[in-house]
Image (tube, rainbow, N blue to C red; front, side, top):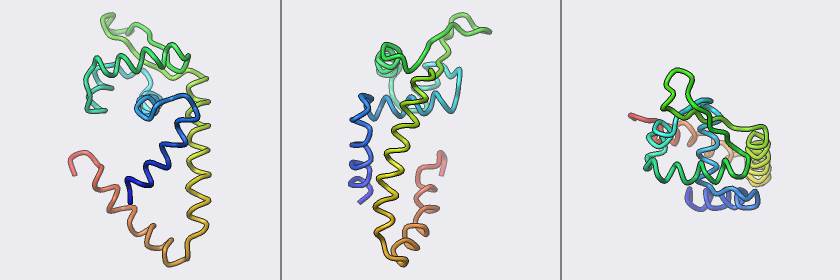
Length: 129
């Protein structure tokens, strides 16, 4: 069921020209301005070369900028550009609209069941839980 829901939400991403993996990175960078590539790879549970490839594409698309770290000149800090923020907002808006339309068709009892399942589901994905 969750896989099916995730598949539908991912479809909303494909129309933006950004992959689901790139969207995940973009969201992490937005929430952690100045994050480095190593930290980003660690948080995503993937390799630095893989993250660098995604960052290369995001940068080429004008969605992310790289800059040399101020304290450690060997470090590269990442930030989401204004265009990257626009893309994130557009995708989130589309996803929210899609989900809202489906939730609006549910009966009250089903909505209550969905609401009751949110906290336990979040506990499954919290680090260290």
